[in-house]
Image (cartoon, rainbow, N blue to C red; front, top):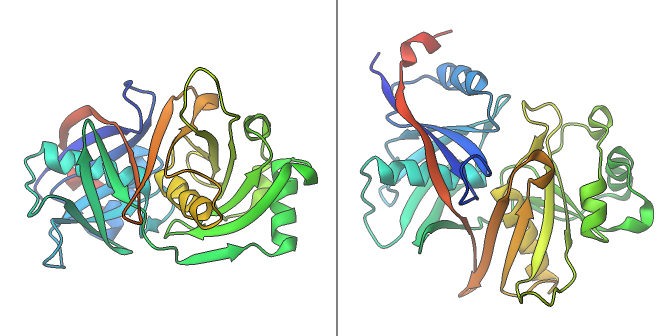
Length: 285
C-alpha cells in the first residue's frame, strides 16, 4: 500500500498551537473506511480528514471527515484545514473559488487575504429545541434558567444543538456534567458588550461533545456557521463580526463571520505545523 502525504494544520488562529488542529491525509483513495477510522482514532484529534478524487465533476476534490468515534458529513475547521493542505500540496482550483465535495454536498471555499473561508451549508435541522431536552441540557451545563435565552437546532451535518446565553461570563463559567449531557453535540454562545476600544462586535463560543476524544472542542467552524444562521434569521448580529473560542483550553481561536450577497462566510487563519508522510500500511485492522 503506498504511503500518503500527511499534514497537521492549525485552524482559526494566526498563532501556532493556538487554534484547532486537524490531521489531513492526502492521496486517501486507496484507504478503506476501516483504515480511515483507525487512523482517526490514532491521531486522537477532534477530526482527521482524507482527500480523495471527486465524484462530482464540479468539485476540485472530495473529503471524508472522521472524528475519533464516527464519520461526519461536514465540519468547519476540517474544511479549511483540508483546503489549506490541498492548496499547499499543489492543488489548483478550476475557478476563482475552491469547491469541496463532502457528505453534505458541495461546499464553496475562498481565499480572503491571509485567510480561508467557507460558505455556511444549509441546515439539515433547525428550529426550537423541545422544552424537556433544552432543560436537560441546561441542567447538564449547570446554568440557571434565567441565564438561557433560547435553544435551537443548528444541525448542518455535525448535529449541533445550541443555547444562547445571557452573557459571556456565563459561557466561560460552565463546567459540564458530561455524563448527563448525552451524545448530542452542544454549543453555547453570548455577545460581548460593545467596547470603546474598538468597533468589532464579538461573541464568545464554547462547544461540548461528550464521549469524543476531546469533550470540549477548541475552535468550531460548523457550530459558528450554524449560530450565524440563527443570528441572521433573528436579526441578532451585524453582517460582520468576530467569534472568540478556546481561551479556557489555552487557545486563541478567532473566527471571522461575514455576510455577502446573502451567503454567510465563516473564515480564519490556517497554519501547517506538521508536514510529513504517513505509512498507511500499518493502519490495516
